[in-house]
Image (cartoon, rainbow, N blue to C red):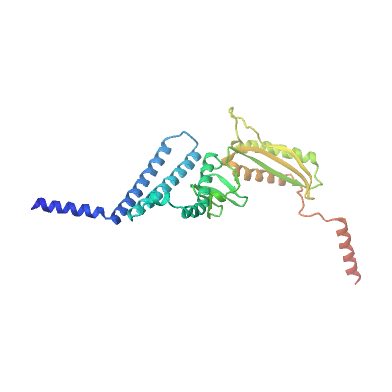
Length: 299
């Protein structure tokens, strides 16, 4: 009797797990747990190894995680279709017109997937890079997937862009960046004096911001801060334009640029350098103004 009861119990368990709904739920749970384990394993692997740069490892990890998610989702959908009696192989083989329609509808999907692969293969960007997309959107790359690129803007807003819609990328984190700061001073300033002041400014910049400069193998700056020269004799009809440049590490470019502006501004202020005006009052404007004033006095 006990044997028969145990046999019936086993049949009930077998029947329960043979239910298609139960099988779908179990597969979903197994897939979910498997994805978590695989992702943690990948993260642990990249943390323990240092084959490539950290940003490249994070980018590769994001792409692999995206690929695993898509593969698991597609596999689960196929399994569900098989459970409800749809022969997926036959449908794909005899799709005909439906397949053509789906093919046209999947063009954007294929384009996004290929663009995501090219981002990784051609090393156009990495996770954590500060970039500009399509000359319009600016921010830090927060995640790279096979279909979407997530960009965190300065305001904190998270922007999600389809990979296939990205037509141009300006990357500010590829090996090095050049600080280019321009100073426009009044036409009444002596160019020799300005050159001398700017050269002294560059010495100060190299002393205070030397840690930001890009170094060669001998730990010497590849291009220290220097006066590039007078880059305009009449910049927007405002004054003489001078330019200071310096080659910095890409990760500290923004800090170096801000500090360079500060030091240049302090030098100009301390030495009473007359900067360019917002506008130039032409002689005929002065004449018209004086004539207007005289006519008002006569009245």
